[in-house]
Image (cartoon, rainbow, N blue to C red; front, top):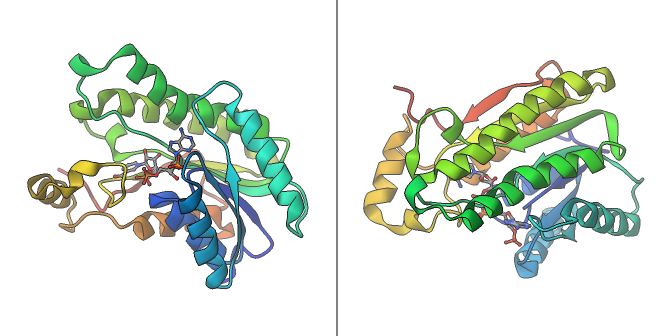
Length: 254
Ligand code: NDP
């Protein structure tokens, strides 16, 4: 379909993993996609080229998140890169997807780990939204990528879980505040998904356990998440806001 035709989207961490699949899907359905990345320019350029080869429109936006001034740096880079495209200023769809994990139980989490994961996963989206609200058009979409970890107890990644739980309540508060502008704000929560964020997926035993956590008996593919995000970003989802939407393949249902 062309359900995102005429829309501009920004996908943080749009270069790799789940964000890459989201960028692809939104572009395939007509959006001009700003593919944000932090460090890996090669991956960002590859994703942009793939989208263009597919007939879509995309451009890279660099900004390291989790450092002071990150949100302003991101928007400055976005504004500059967008101006080079033949498109009006501003955007319609903001996907806060960039994130990192801390695969350690409470006993092993250092203060530096804790501060870092909150800086990237919670503080950055907060200020990206705050500084982006004047750019986001009425009727727009904010989609925060949460995690199934906020639905069930999973002690091995407790500090990460806390960052996503905070994002869930930012989602709820913002949905209430932005309704008057016709902007929906939702969280989409992946389960165990095949990306580079979790290197232990290469370990057969862990892979098997995470696959079996889904009622469908497999890991999530980034496209499984992207399809849900595309729906939430579309006009079809205009009556859905303030929600936490599971995209975990029925992980840990009972
Ligand atoms: P990946 O590690 O595959 O990709 C992460 C993306 O975020 C990259 O584009 C990366 O760009 C960007 N990024 C990471 N850190 C920074 C930073 N400090 N500054 C700027 N950009 C950054 O992750 P996933 O695709 O797996 O995860 C995407 C989202 O989904 C995250 O929020 C994650 O928490 C969530 N999620 C993932 C699950 C999974 O099983 N994979 C499960 C539940 C939720 P670059 O490399 O250039 O810095």
